[in-house]
Amino acid sequence: MPTRRFTTVHDLRRNHRAELLSALYVDGPLTRPELSAATGLSAGTVSNVVNDLIDAGAVVEAGALDSSGGRPRILLRVSPTRGYAIGVSIGPRHIQAGVFDLAMTELSRIDQPLPAESRDPEQAARQIDAVTDEVIRTAGVDRAQVLGLGVGVSGVVEHGDEILVSAPTMGWDAVPLARLLQHGRGIPLFIDNGAKNMGQAELWFGAGRGAQEAVVALLSSGVGAAIVTHGNVYQGASSSAGEWGHMTVEVGGRRCGCGARGCLEAYIGAEAIIDRYRQLTGRRTDPYADDQTVLAAIVAAAPDDPEARRVIDETALYLGTGVANLINLINPERIIIGGWAGLLLGDQILPAVREIARENALRVPYRDATIHLAELGVDAAIVGAAALPIAEFLRTGGAAAQTPAVSGVMIRS
Image 1: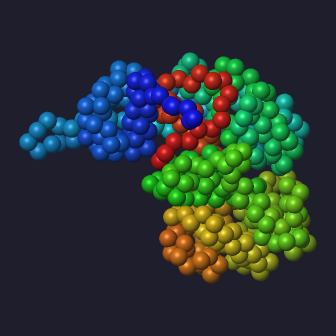
Image 2: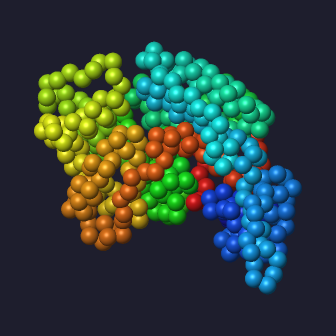
C-alpha cells in the first residue's frame, strides 16, 4: 500500500514563499497582481505571504507604477542586502572567488594561479579556504549574513551521503571535497560541476533567460554542458549529466585527458586546440604563457596564417557536429556556447558552427533551435557558483541554510 504524503500548513506556507521569492528573483520587480498571475496563487495568498517576506527582510518595495483611476501599484523585489553569496571556481590552473549580494552586484573578487603542486586535494582545499576568508574580508560583509559558499569544479560531482569529486584534469578521483573544506563547518557549503553552475548563471542572468529547454555548452581547458529541461538544470542519476565533452566523435581518435580516445574534448578543448596547432606547425608556443594567451594568439593569427586557419576551421567542424548531436538528442529551443575558450573563438566560428549543425542535425529539431554565444563571459564561473547558495535560499522561501554541506540545488527560471 503506498505511503500517503501529508502537507502541513507550514509546508504549504514555505512552498508559497519559495514560489514568490523565485518569481521575484528571476523576473522581478513585480507587482502583487503580477505575482499572482505568474504563480497562480490567489491575490489573498500573495498579499499575506508577501507581507511575511517583507517583515522578514527578504522582500522590499522597489517603486510604484501609475494606475489609471486607482492607487499606484507597488513594485516588489528581493532585498539585495538580505544576504550574501560566495562563489568559488577552481580549475586545473587557476582559482577565482567573489562575493555577491542578492542583486548579483560583485563586492569583491580574487583571481589566483593554481600551481601544479596545489592541485593536491588537501592543498587545494586550503587555498579555497584562504581565498574565501580574503574575499569576505575585502567585501566588508558580516560573516553571519553569508548565505553560503558555492564551489564549482571541473569533473564529476557525486551527491550522496558524501560529496565526491572526480576530476581527471586535476588528478582527483572520488575526492571528499566537502569534508576537506573547513568552511563546511561554519558557512553552508554547496558544490557542483562548474559547467552546470555556469549554465545556471546564463539561465538566470544571461543568454538563457526565459528558456525552458536549453543547453549551455562550455569550452575551456575542458568541455562540458548544462542541460536545461523544464527550466531546471538536469543532474542525472549520479549528478554526472552534461559530460558532453566525453561524447565520442572519432572512434580510436585523439587521446583525451579522461583516458579514452576520440572524445569531443580532445578536439575542441583549449588544450587540444593548442596541441593540434603545435603538431600541425611543429612550432613551439611560449612555455610561460597561459592557455588563454596562446589560444588568443592562434585565433588572432587565423586570418593570415593558413595553419592557424585550418585548426580553427577544424574546431568549428567538431563543435558544429557536437552541437548537431545535442540538437538531435535533446531537442532544445536554445543552445548557448560559452566558457572562456568558446567566447574567444566566438564570433569567428559561430556562423560556421551554425551551418555545420544545420547540415548534420535533423531538420525538425534544428528548426526549433537557435544557437547563441553566452552573455556573462568569464564571470559566469563564479556567478554560477554563487547561484548555488542563492538557489537554496529561494528554495527554502528565504530561510537560512542549516546543512553544512549539501548538493547544488537549481531553481526554475
